[in-house]
Length: 167
Picture 1 (cartoon, rainbow, N blue to C red):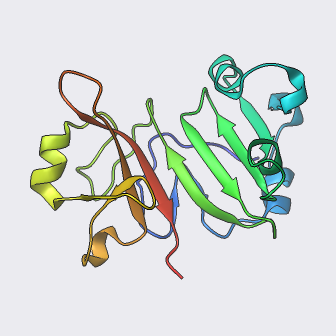
Picture 2 (picture 1 turned 90 degrees about the vertical axis):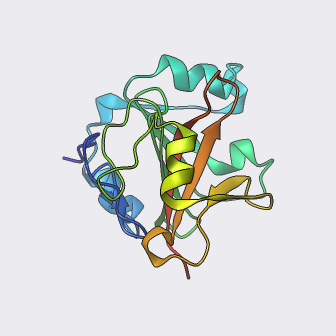
């Protein structure tokens, strides 16, 4: 059975939440309890954000549903979007995104909710406009990691971490 581990360490270019990059959809499906799964389609008439926030188990979204048919694959949201698993058109996990509620850390000191100033002092991420995320350049420790910052709060904080493989 596939279990989400919200305390798992975040390993750059490897894993987070108990899932490893490169996992196949078949392996993922085989470990699911189907009673924990819902599927979202645009024809449901419910905005995706609302469907994610209402679902505390697994929500499957075919990528074509949110890309006007241009992208194939599946995106799986767990526990109101705390964990996102992105599978490509070949059925391989290529991105793990983690958000509010996740307890695991990156290099034992970077965590969701961390003040941005602390993150900046630790690794000096820069904003990548093309990807719309913060990244740390020229540092192997942070290769394959992206950061999402919530700047709407009084004190900006780390609101998301993305784990992906550099090819």
